[in-house]
Amino acid sequence: MSIPRVQDPGLETEAHAARVAGVAPADPLSPAERYGELFEAVQLGRVFDDSKTFVDCVPLAHPDAILAEYRARRDQDGFDLVRFVGERFQVVRPPPSDYVSDPDQPLLAHIDGLWDVLTRHPREHRPFSTLLPLPCAYVVPGGRFGELYYWDSFFTMEGLAASGRHDLLHDMADNFAWLIDHYGHVPNGNRSYYLSRSQPPVFALMVELFERHGVCEALPYLPRLLREHEFWMRGCEGLGHGEASQHCVRMDDGRLLNRYWDASDRPREEEYLEDITTARAQSARPQAEVCRELRAAAASGWDFSSRWCDEGGDLSSTRTTTFVPVDLNAFLHALETQIADLSRKSGDARTAERYQAIADARRAAMLRWLWDEPAGVFADFDLKLGARRTWPCAAVAVPLYVGLATHEQAARTVEALRGGLLQRGGLGTTGIDSGEQWDAPNGWAPLQWMAIEGARRYGLDGFADEVRRRWLATVGDVYRREHKLVEKYVVADTGDGAMGGGGGEYPLQDGFGWTNGVTRRLLGEGDSVLT
Image (cartoon, rainbow, N blue to C red; front, side, top):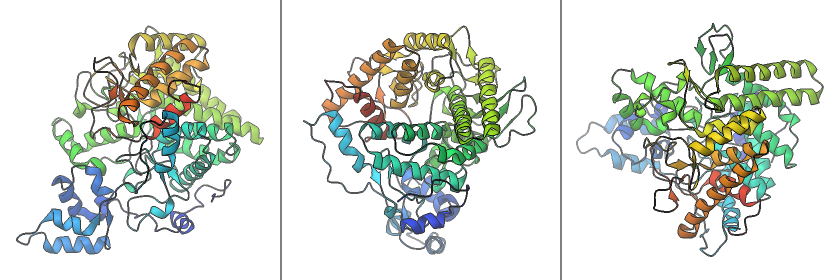
């Protein structure tokens, strides 16, 4: 079932999508708004080991009735909160599956067999769930992540294309188009508590992927691309030099760049206790400020990393909104370039000229503020310190991936990555071991893919081949031993052999969407050992 591909933004409504899918519409309130003091008691009282469990629960009665009963009974002798919640909410578990990993099955076949296991369908949406209904089937990462995620999905889609799953690619195209039509942006994930933020804007890359594989033409998506750009640039009008608003930053010379941002400054509902605990560790900053910065880090996809912290600081020093990130601005350059290209193809020369000028202005701003000549990389700019970040970070590969670097810049970036982050098991994330998951010693599939493809784009095949070989060896070693793929891997040489990564707010997750996608795409190049 496909939604119309050409329409005015906003014509589709959530209720309409729910009727089309035959499911209940999403609860218009988030769990904190819906359940008030009950939500706070459950999360602060650690009724569930994982804060995400409660916000994903489905109520077994009308939420208003549950809340009224809680208020009437909570002060009674012998009231048991754990029992009360257990009797009135259904914990959402992954759908039952008869899939069993065959230890003798090649890795490629294992991944191809997992796509259906990781697919969710609109009929699974329940009344008053936090799950936002979508019109078509979608692929989730796996483990605790039972919903669609924005930038994860792009890397998953690369694998779906390599597996020949154009049916799922077509469904995903409809879903992302619908999200932009309805919300004006792609939320972090299709949950009500994710609506206040997006993630790295990769819809333009998705659209190019759809057309390249013959799933659908790119041109009908132009209105959605324009609307997503509007979301990221909202608030830029009237900014003075050195000022910032929402996602936009006007640099001291008047050039415009972007940052990550979340519209809310409350603790994340899916990590409520964790955010309050982190905020309390930083007594010099208001809780709302710390929570905003943690949310912005979640919007970056790099949650969490020393990349967003004071040098030598812990998680409580996170200040994501004070950085102008190289990857975000590279993705937005790709979005602007594609809008210009598609406008030109549609015969709209005026819009094409406008957005080409916007893309060119962004590239000029990145050359002025983000290119680090001594280091030979595009790097994040620290607005607080007025300087670029100097330590190694794999995000520097993104300008190569989207093609905005010169050949000389690409060659220098590859040498910097080779000297600073290339490890035994693939490309590292940063050069700092902070205990956070987006730092050493971990490596992540999307970072491998962008570095590999970015290097290939400039003919730097030796580096691309080396990263690919090391990454596939790591994934393959863990698969042969444990018969699964995981969310992240230790790529540094610890002396213990290949293993899944650690750090962060939750245990290592199995599945796993973007690891499957990138590995399947790389295996598609023909690895005789692992296929």
